[in-house]
View 1 (tube, rainbow, N blue to C red):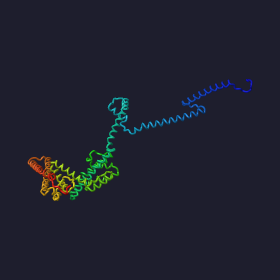
View 2: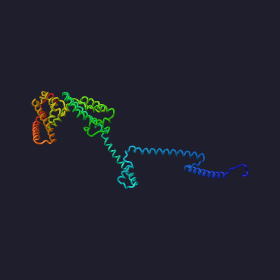
View 3: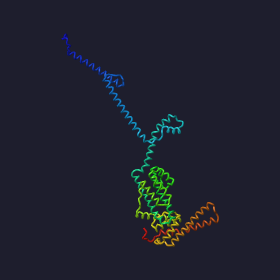
View 4: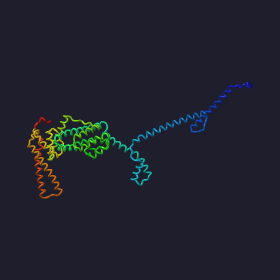
Amino acid sequence: MKKSPVFLVTEEDLKQAALLENAMGRKEKKDERRKKATEGSGSSRGGGGLGNAREIKIKKTKKKSRKDEDSDDESQTATTNKPKEREIPFMSLEEIQDVLRKHVPDAPDELLIELSENLIRPLTKNYQEVVRSVFMSSTSSSSGASRKQTMKDFQEEVSTLYNNIRLFEKGIKLFTDETQNNLSKHLLRTVCTDITNLIFNFLAGDIMMAVEDSSTITSEVRKKMLNKFQEESRGPLTKLNSSLAGKSIEEFLSCLDAAADTCGILVKKGDKKKERQVLFQHRQALIEQLKLTEDAALVLHLTSVLLFQLTTHCMLHAPGRCVPQIIFFLSTKIPELFFLSFTQEQHSLLNNYQSLVVKQLIGQTKQKDDDDVDVTGDLAEESGKASDSIRKELQELSAKIKDLVLRPRKSSASEE
């Protein structure tokens, strides 16, 4: 069989071939693993076609991994920087080092740098907590139900003052032109200024210019506020502020209505029932004040205003210098005052009391002038005796003047 020209593969040959093939396969796999290890370590040495394909695949995977890592780094950086944008800085490292250097001038720079690095985080944290607490306390009254209640109280106060001005205006219109102008100016300088300051101060809260007591706001302060207000509200508020220097209550109320509409302020107009309540409360307040006072000028003032209201059923807001005009007005209304038993005799008593009050005021002014020039002797003694006489007479008459409005009186069909 061995002499045959045909190459015959025996069973022994097959076994040897299988062993040889296994040995070659192990060698190829070992070479392939070595190539993979070399390629994984970043080697640029080439290999077969399969090696190149594997290398490309590995490179793609590495690029994707780097992209993901960059994306993760960016998101982490954004997350880290996001709260820092909202943080309010306290001091920089250099500023802290400068402060430390002022207190410990002999300390080495290395120590100051290390101290500043350790201090900056706790100092910044404490500073931000204080700022946050102040911010929350300043905004708590302007949020939610508290702000609604504040707005409700504000509008109620504005409405009360508005209706009082309307009622005072009715009383002013019963006087002649000159007295009417004086009473109007007094109302504009007092109650009308109060309601204007109230509105200005409420709106100034949005521009951080509000004050604790609105009655302390002056004309100069209102002008400064006007420059900060928004354009749409500045015009009506400027007219409202200017109307305080005029003589017309009607003009002021017209400007007040326009300013309230522009600024979104709801003003509740009073009805007849509400007006009667206000008249009663105002009269009672004046009566209580009259009961307590012993000042002769104030007794005359309150009695005159109360008699005016009891006669006309109109409130009156008047300065002391207008008391003579009020008493003269009452002299023309004696028939209407009959239900008070206010006769011509009582009116004469009121006139006499007024004369004594005027003399007392003149005497006090003269005595003050004499003190300034150091007047002594008989003139000073005579002036003192005259003042004592007037004071005693006023004390005797004060009770009778108060009784004109305090004593029980007959009911009147026209009285509320």
